[in-house]
Image: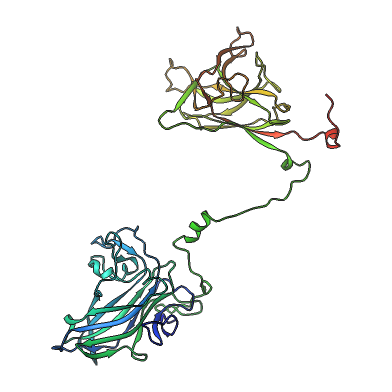
Length: 468
C-alpha cells in the first residue's frame, strides 16, 4: 500500500486545501519498517540565476517521540536524538532529463537545521541502515518527534545554490523503525525559486512515490521474492518491540477475586507466618557458627489454635564436616523437653557447600498448640561427615546469618533466642546445658514457619465448645 497520499486531513493555517501526507489513516499510527520517499521529477536547476536558488515548502509532523538515551550511530559516533524521521535529499544525475544516470545523493539541511537534543544530539536511528557506517553525522539527521503542540505547521527553506546547472531530483525520505510511531508527516506548497522566478511547483500529478522498503500486508506478494504473505497483524496493530505495554502494565491498577473456600477444607483454614526474615545493614552484618551438640532455639507463640506445617531455615554456604541439618520442636519451659514424637527432622547438606536453605515438613510432627501457647523451634547439626580435605584439627560448624531483633534477649517474648546443648548431645547434662539467653547480643537466626489453624472437631463444628 502507498505511504504518501493527498489529503485535506489536518491541512489548515498556512496549508492550503490538501497536502502530501505520509501516514496510514485518520487517527492511526503510520506503518512500521518503512523507507519511502515523495519525489519531484528530474529538473534542471538554472545557473547564473538572478538571485539564489532555494527550495521552500510548509511541513508538519507527528512522529515517534524523541529519545536521547540510545548509543552512538556509525563510526563517527553520532549522538542519537530519536528513531523515526524525514529528511530532504537531492539526487544528482549525470546526463540530461531524458537519459539520466544517478550520480550522487546528498542530504540537505534546512536553514536553522532539523533540530537537536539538549546535548547537541542530531542522528536518527531509522537512517542507520540507509547510509554506510562511515557516513558523516549529517546523513543521519532529519525531523523527528513533533513539529509543535496542536499539530503546528512550519515553513522550511533550503539553499540549492551548489546544484546550479545540474539535473536533480528532490525527495522527502520517510524512515520508520519496527516500533510505535505517530500519525506521520505532511508537506505542502513545494516550490523551487531562482531569485524571484518560480522554476518548480509540486502539484498533484507531478510528484511521485519511490518505495525503498515497506512491510507488506497479508495477501500481498513480497516485493522482491514475490512470495505470498500469509499472515499479518490486524489493521491498527503493531508489534510492541519497544515493550511499551510491558512498562505500562507494571504500574497498571489491577484486582482479583478468589472463590470462597469450602467450609472445612484445607483452603479455608487460617494461616500465619512465624519468625523473621533476614535483615541487616550492609555496613554491619553478623553471623554465628553452630558446632556439634549445640542447638539454636527461637521462642514462638501460637497466634490461634493450630500447628506448624512447614519451616525454612536459611544458612550460609560455608561449613565444615556437616552432612545434615536438624530441626526440633521443644517446650518453652526448662528443661526444654522435645515435643511431638521427640524425633528431630533432618535436611541433607551434601558436598562442600551448604545449599543455603533447608525446608522441613513439620505437619506430621508438630503437636496442636492452643492460642498464645509458647514453644521453641531449635536448629542444629543433624549429622557429621568429614571430607578428605578437611583439617583434622578443625571443629565442624554450620554457619548462620543473623538479623537484629529487639526481643532476642527478652525471655518470655516471641523471638527470645537461646543456645542449648540437649541431654542426648551431652549425657552428663541434666536435661540441657544452656549458654543463656541472647547469645548473639540482640540478634537471632533466620527461620520462617508456616502455622496452620487446626481443623474444627465434630463438637466445635456443631457449635459446642470443646471439653476442658
